Length: 350
Image (cartoon, rainbow, N blue to C red; front, side):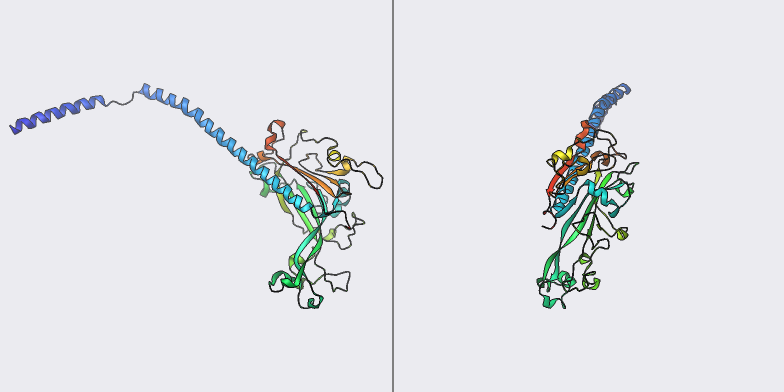
């Protein structure tokens, strides 16, 4: 009996397995081909959409980065200019260019040049009786002696340049044409010794000061605001000056869409006059810009009122490609512009 039951169960199991094997079939070649085509038609547009969305997002991010960089740059220039006591207009810059850094280099162009008061913290002993024991370096480095010292102001000559060289450091991504950048030079006077008897050298010795309290070698002690285009610097000491890059990826378009209105600065500054002749100052006197007319970094200056209006135009597309992209009105969003107008401390001597 047991044997018969076992045979019946075995036979039933084999029948069920046979039916299962018959129902388990794979995809035919036609079905596979049709499925592949449908997947291609669905996935390809979706993939293209995703790639386009990622590219758009990247462009927007780079545009935002450029806008932030430009805003930070004009904020820095604004703070710098707020301490200005004399600002050179374009005519004066052309007169003193041989006395400025990068003299004669047509790829490094001075756009904004001015004199300012530079504050040096904890530099001068307060009481004359402690001059012999407390030195400027003690004021700056010894916390126990800082209360015996005052801050002091010194003159500084500041120059902002537009650089158009091919330094690979600033070419990212690397390519044929490097992005234009803005760099800053500063030449400052040093802390003077109130007890000095030698008026040709009224400074503390280097051993009594730290580097930030010392006169820059290119500073010219003979400079006089009554003759602002003479003795601007010691030209023999300009070769070792180092610039500080303020902002990169400045537009350097080669087309004519970047041209400014012929009276851009005259209008912006309220049609200023020459105080001696009472004649209206011309655009060529007021506006300092690059020699090629790119107008991506320029300054409108009214020297008499000590006012400067600075404009910078960036190029976010250069961050994506190896060569510069020319400015177009249809893509102006990728060429953001920042402008600031600042009045300095006051006329010289005030």
